Length: 301
Image 1 (cartoon, rainbow, N blue to C red):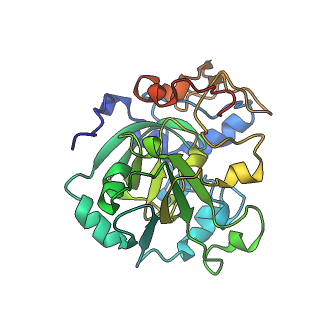
Image 2: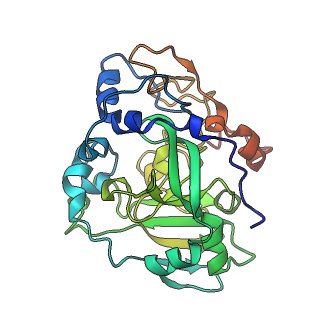
C-alpha cells in the first residue's frame, strides 16, 4: 500500500533475544546506579546475557489495571479473558461497528509484517513487533473528512483486572493521537513480539505502538477506537497535566519536571555503560518531524 514505511533497521539492530529476556535483571541493577532517563533508542547489544525464563521476561511491566507494582501484571494478568475479543470503532467513520479480533486479523494477514522499531517502554531497546499499520484498520472503518483525532480506550473489567478496583487512574485508560500521527506508517497495531503472541501483561491481544513517543502512549488491550474532530482526553494528562502532555514525543531538550531527558543509558552495554545523548523523536526525527512543523514543542509536549 502507498503509505508503507521503508524500514531502515536490520536484524543487526534488534536487541538480542537473550538481552530482551533479561530486562528485569538489568533494570533492577540500574535502579541502584541512577538510571535517570528511560528514553531513546537502543542499537544491538555487544554482549549477550544469561536468558531468563518467559515468566521473568514479562515480569517488569507498567499496566496499572493489574496493579501499580512492576511485577503485578505478570502475577495477575493471566486472569484476563482475551477470547473472544472485539474492538468498537465509532465516531466519524463510514463503517462503525464491533470488529472482532479474528476478523481484523483475517483482513490484515496479508499485510502483517515484522517492524524492527527503536522503542520506549520502561526500558530502551529495539524490539521486533509483529503487527500492521494502524492506517490499514482505520481505512477499513472509513475515516470521514472532518475527523482530526483518534481516541483509544482500554478494557474495563474489574473482575479480571483487579487494579481497576482502585482509583489510581480515572478508568478506563484512554489515549489519543492526532489523525496524521495515527495514519503515519510508523504507527502500528502490534499483535506479537519476536513472532509470538503478545502476553497478556504486555497488552494482548492488540496494542498501539508509536515509536517516536514515550511508552505510556502505547495503550494496551484496546477495545474502542473513536474518530473525532476534538482532541481526546489521555489518562496521564488527566492525572497530571503538568508532567504529561497530549503529544508525549521524545524530546531531549524538554526536561520532565522531575528529571532530565537529555541522555540515556543503553540496555545491553552493562551497568556502567556510558551515557549518550537521547535522540530527538527517539531517532525518528527524519520520518516524523514534519508532523510538527511550526509547533512549539516545549509548549505542545
